[in-house]
Length: 356
Image (cartoon, rainbow, N blue to C red; front, side, top):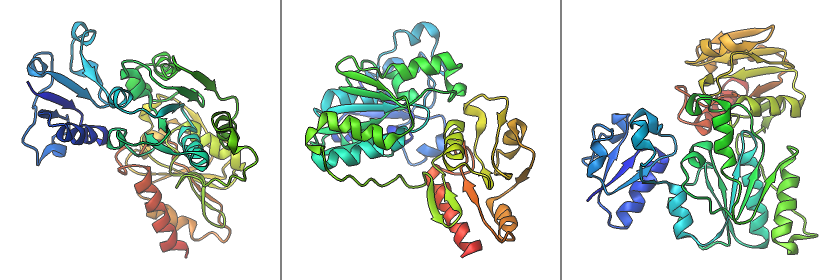
């Protein structure tokens, strides 16, 4: 019998590679049929009946199972996730990091520090699929884990886990905050220990945690680099924070910078379910993109303007003699960009076009 990959995003494609390398025959289902245009092994419709012919199901994190299966079948659905496969097949010490804000930053710092004293790799939501690196032989794997992954994870085999914070996010997927919080808390380690961060000094948290694991780090001069597009200063007065994909990361940026200049927002606000977002500090707020009206409906500020494109905003900003600009979208890309990297690069390109 064949296996079935459900969802053909980044994780689904890593399933495809993994199954092919292991000579396992499979079909693929994705609601967006444009992703499967060049594929022959496609399942057209996903429901209780259509999966009965498959031996195994490999499910991507972002798939909402309740859309396709009855409640009675959901409870007994036998499936595997990328986390489950990684736990089974990789022998490294696994450090899981989750949270609403700061998890990518902490994973980045922790991976850098552990590579000074030993060997480590950063995987998961930070951009490197787990299954593409399932055979690595580093001592540590630092994994950025989403609530989607944790919700579907069968059993927790993290050796250590860290929770940065838990605030409103992904309400459109989980239904309410309680479900979202419970998904995040599934990371709490059954094997080792779980750390709940009490501050947002992620550099210090990473150093302290790594020192416990690798005492020979003591006394070493550690110089860490930031993630691209996370509070990245690209010129005097201009900050690219495209990595800001929720309101928690937006407010973190505003508070950390004590920002009083021009703020640029974009992206799809639907995942958090907020009815109102009070923005304090910036002189002006510019909103652009396909979701601008949705953002305008929830954002509260005395000086907001909406624009169809980022070019329109730069046309306004280049007239200002003194530039103090923060591009911190505060939302996932939605229908505007493929991801935060693409929109970060777009911002940098337009900054060069209009200001340099």
